[in-house]
Image (cartoon, rainbow, N blue to C red; front, side, top):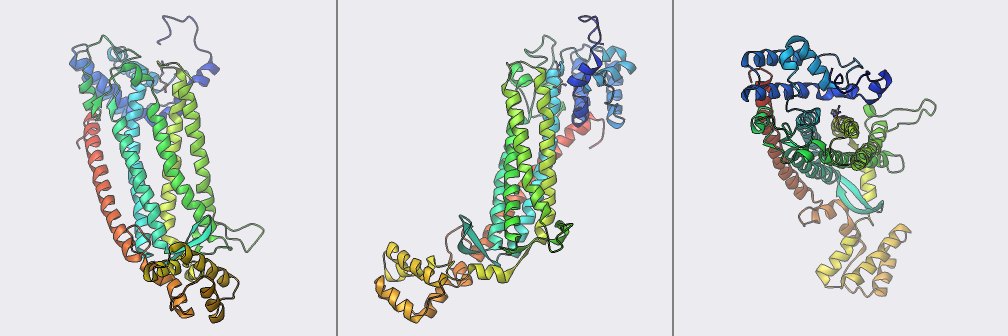
Length: 479
Ligand code: ARG
């Protein structure tokens, strides 16, 4: 083994276990094998190892893709040592050359980037499916009157479709970060060796293209020892989780008996073991906790990355599993919410009641300003008094007349006119600015978002085809 020159004694069994990454290396097992296949090809191209042996080694490594070696032997520090040992058993000359010009430091980060690229494509697709569910719901509920809140106080009549579309747009924006991240990690560190590059004549461009990377990294110290990209990935995942968490929070609140604006689907609810009347929105409750988990992962990765001098330290190893854990949590939650969104039901009576006067009372002020040139502040004060009368159950012909006189509103405005101005359906149809909750405008906006979704689908298809083409070749498969 690689210790025998420098060390006399074997690593303590507990120390080996304590420092090993084997238990989370499974995620990069395939990528590490691919990195080794690429490296063997490079050594062959450089004339360092003979073609017949290189070919045998490649076949062997390809075989490992189908029959992966066990990662359970605690004598090995990590997956890299397992692969080297496995290959050495069968093609000893090449096994012994596997670390020529290649360190675990550049190999591991290359494998992480390779695997992350695949995971980002999957994340992108899972986000797309969620966005699609939101957009379909937005379209289906574009006419369903629903109150929207500021300060958790009824603020304006809108529609449930409008609310769903707001989440779809947030997801579409988050997708831009996923794509940026993909471009960021689409560079191969292989050939950087341990920290400063190598004197072995390796064609880095060639190994990058074999592994489906679009470029090579430019500084060996940076590429072997920086995990900034993992912190960025975790930030991006936290952002996605934030969106999911706020949706979940909203669903919990709106489905509570106090609000009762939506019906949380039974298939996603639990009941209480003691209180038979309960219908607990457990899926949303669990989903909103995941933001806390993500923040924990982001925080620990950031702190680990920050507390070390440049150049590889084994601290870096501990950052990697945070990334895979976070991806798991976010994907799982996205899939759960994609399933849940279509079965959300709106309680139309309750929503209409929540939107009834005075929720749309600003329209009274708008009307007075736009149609009768009354300064908005004065109109606003009058509308404010109208809302108070409504809340107190004291609005009638007489109190209206008195209020108009008190606020100098000298225009023909009867009680019926007032109620029509505030009528929720009329209000939402009167919204005219781009991005407003007018059902027709929401439908148009949803259609625009669907076009964006199509562009996103094309992007991910394109990237997947390119990546799979390269990797299938390396795996020795036809694509
Ligand atoms: N298991 C390590 C990791 O995941 C691989 C690199 C180890 N390098 C070293 N010089 N000990 O980061």
